[in-house]
Image (spheres, rainbow, N blue to C red):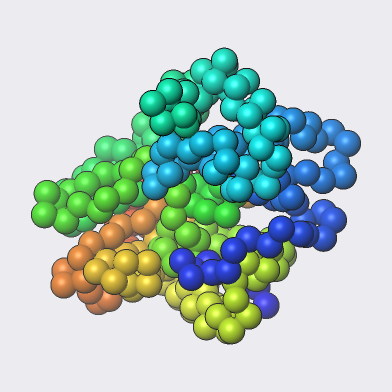
Length: 289
């Protein structure tokens, strides 16, 4: 089995893993600590705290952070104090809780500013979005999700409520499916094994089927689809962009309302134009990004 999927109804992340399968991007501490002598656990725990903050969890207290990470509350208190002193967290006295600080923003902005691919891709993304009255996105894999690196909206009527830095699931989105389809069979098998541990056993056959279909679609058309699986009202196409040395995969997607973004339109117009966009960006960058 070479597929990898994810669903909003997936089971909670398991707290134990076999050696060598640690995911350093998780906020669950048992998935951060491992036997790697070069891995600094204290830094891992600090970033685990930061990763707990999301669009739907902007303010968190030490108790909540301890529950989310699995760390002792006393350890969390020392970490939040340190992160606050460094400017990566901000303490809110009235609530006795924390939110992300300016330091976290500057890290993200510095990263985005260094992405030449955004500078090259955005005008082309905006043109496609305007021409098709859609939302065009650029994303990259991080941890267990795809993260939006850039977004272009082409319609005031249809405007997906997504922002740069927001995470979306792999298996349920065209963006994520495109990333999966571009992986080598060996990479996909390893990736899939990791994700299978995160879903309910009864859900796996259907999820595997969905992702295998996405891989077949990519082989046939050069792009993947998401036909309402992530959002009932949205259909989308996704295409991967692989660096010349094969070490990095980004993905583009084009999304629109179901009444306008039909499968026929995705196949005959949207998908091919998305591939042209990808090819132009890739050529301009010389395959290096």
